[in-house]
Amino acid sequence: MTEFMAGISNQRPSARFLVVMTALILLLTGLAAARLRLPLWADEIVTVQQIGAPPQYGTISLSESLSRVQENVWHPPGYHVLLYFWGYAVGWTPFALRAMSLFAGLLAVALVAQLARRHFSARVAVYAAFTMGVSAFFINYLYDMRPYSLLVLTTLLMLWTYERAAIRVQPTFWAYAAFALSVAAVIYTHYFAALG
Image (tube, rainbow, N blue to C red; front, side, top):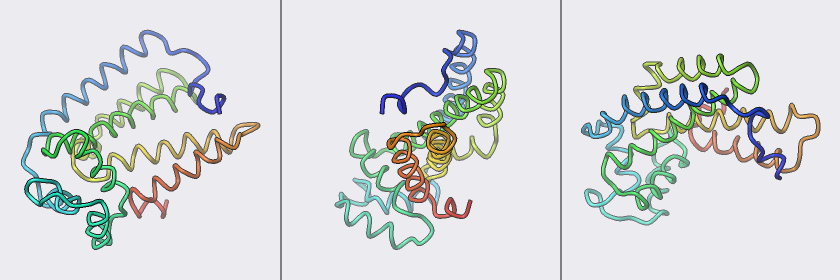
């Protein structure tokens, strides 16, 4: 398992690469953080109702929240379950609940950079992270209380674990297990991911 948990790249990233990536992450955080306090829109209100976020909708149990989520045939329960526990951990304000999507999106940008650095170069990694980070579509959903940022993150985790399980010369049991969990995470985040 130690081999599987080793760093994505065998080489240490340069100081310039770390500075550029830190600046990009801070830029994205600034672009999205300003919007975390916006009023909820219709789909986010549905999300809040489904997870039973207090005080507006009353505290409900996880099983009640899951039954509410299952009434919506468009989304699997993965994101909602995570948001349910996230709300109990950090609070139920729109700012706190939207922060989970922001963190997932920022982790996705960092992971796409690491994957690109491993397979190409640090320069390509910065370009890939920048291109993904400044995409209007990505920024629009970066602060949204919907599963889309988490879907990008779980898809990238699936690609990373696939590389560990299928492309490596001698994959370990842990590589296969991580790949299976990442595939399940993608499908439980959004049903349309199964079509890809």
